[in-house]
Image 1: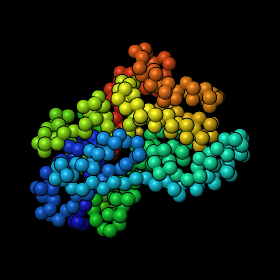
Image 2 (image 1 turned 30 degrees about the vertical axis):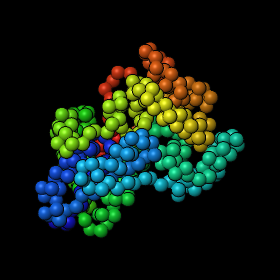
Image 3 (image 1 turned 120 degrees about the vertical axis):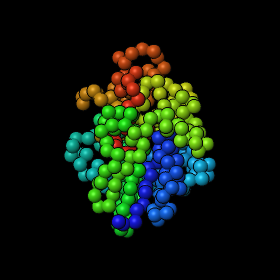
Amino acid sequence: MKPVTHVLSYSGGKDSTALYLLGIEIAERWASRRGQTIRVVFADTGNEHPETLDYVRDLPRRSGGPAIEWVRADFTADFARKRHYVAEHWPADGVPDSIVSQALEVLAEPTGIPFLDLCLLKGRFPSRRAQFCTSELKVIPITEQIILPLLESGLAVFSWQGIRAEESPERATKPRIQSVGGGLWIWRPLHAWTIDRVFAIHRRHGIEPNPLYRQGMHRVGCMPCINCRKDELREIARRFPDHIDKIAAWEAIASQASKRGATTFFHKENASGDRSAEEIFAGANVRQAVAWAMTSRGGKQLDMLRMHEPLPVCSSAYGLCE
Ligand code: SF4
């Protein structure tokens, strides 16, 4: 058996904190005895709440657990390719010169904010049906920067994922342990855990969950997440209006990289292709979404936010987005 490194994907949420605390307990029981090591990795999307970042930074000190390594997606090389593509292909596709020019200008160099840079490259924000954010901002950086180098150095890797079966029918179908090949295994040690067990391990270690839960947040990943529900958006707008201002600013910037000249954070899945950029933006920008979230009316005005359905969990199997 090859030497093993355990890689815990950490997000700052309650499940991944339970995973981290379980890692401490398991490490104490057997990892050091067998010469196995644990590494913990947090993928910073550039769209997290500062309290989550502080929580992640401080957890090793408060818990006595392993250091948390941070990774960030870097799209510098992709920007050069995208500029070339826009200059070559957009005019031939009939895109007006003014839109081509503004795209080339905004794509001159990355902002250094992974979430925004990804949206600039795509010319749009992610959506439920095109949720490229999880893979591009979390899965790929963790895989490329942490897991692949370990595998290439001859180690076996157990990638720990903090998903639970009771979160969704889709997650319930995931095996507890799974071989990916090439020395990589996926391990989901919380698969059978209840939410009570998640909070119990927090108490056992004297660790409070991320403080954002006490401030009305149901999830603590991106602030906001594109999967945000109506009541969550209302709470974010009430408590953290600066995060709405941030998204409004990002909408203005990302719109400059859009072929249509406009894109909105909350994607309207049924927006028809013949609507003008102004119509799309006027009807569904983040300020409109917030105004709607403040009402008690139904979903006629905006249908991109769900009203009462259970909290959607990230469709990825990785449990990297809460
Ligand atoms: S938390 Fe939401 S917006 Fe952020 S990467 Fe995950 S799915 Fe995308």
